[in-house]
Length: 113
Length: 115
Image (cartoon, rainbow over all chains, first blue to last red; front, side, top):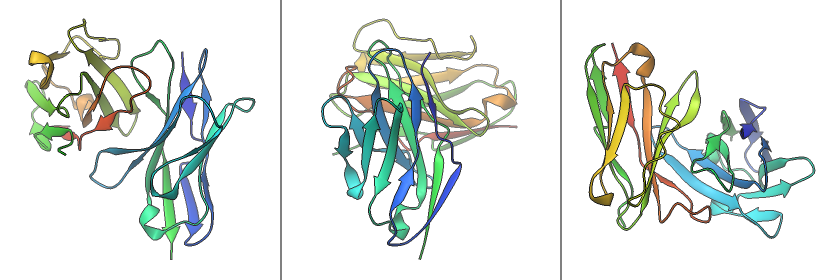
């Protein structure tokens, strides 16, 4: 069975500083990895995905993520955080055979001015 | 263009009652998914529809839960004899197809509260 772990319930960052939200995964076969963001009272919004190719994936709103096969990680990063980035972030994995996304528990990002 | 829409946005029901939640996917999207987001369980997959194929019901937690998709578009998730543990936000998502290449677009969710 596939699984995703987001080890931090909350990440606090000062505006303008770089941010990292951690994600590790477990899946049989090739992993297909996704990051979604959820703002209060809103649905999940797609940020980026890794299917194949370059390990560094660039997505919406200046976010990027690095796929590391040996560490089975897919950490989300942004060089300079904004207060408006404060939200709940979910990492998800899907395998080739499965029909659904398996999500991590979510990490709340708090960016302070 | 219009995104995934869900109705109602909020639903409060008494324990034991049946409820129906509706999802309108993005036009032209053949794949439709239901997920549940709750405090204790996080985000869980419930059911998946792809075109006219038989749905993948592997995530439904009990036989009180069922879903249908009429005409390959609108979907209804039905919960019979609701229990307090059914309280959660029910999210619907659609994608252009079920293939791994296509990301899922989520609706705003229906918040279900069972009293």
